[in-house]
Amino acid sequence: MNKKITRNLFVKQLNEKGIGASVHFYPPIHEQPFYKNYPEWIADDLVATENVSKSIVTLPLYTSMNKKELDKIIKEVKSILH
Picture 1 (tube, rainbow, N blue to C red):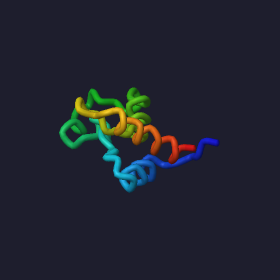
Picture 2 (picture 1 turned 180 degrees about the vertical axis):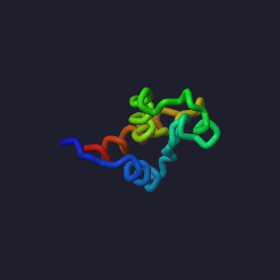
Picture 3 (picture 1 turned 90 degrees about the vertical axis):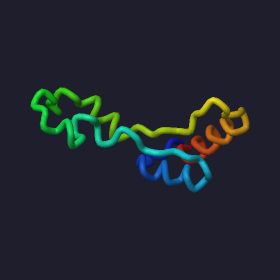
Picture 4 (picture 1 turned 45 degrees about the vertical axis):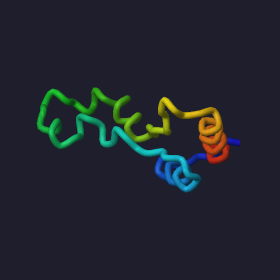
């Protein structure tokens, strides 16, 4: 059975298990202070961007990651979501 879980709770639970998950790309670029003043950014045209920015999670990924580390991440993600 899949659980409904918020992104912030998901990241928190991964962090508690020693996995450096985080939230990036929020708010989306068109809502960043620098870009908010540009009238060509029309939020209605960026529905997908809005949705992705509210749900995306960054999981650890680096060139020296070994299979044991990868397996731990997979195991913990599954344990939280199922």
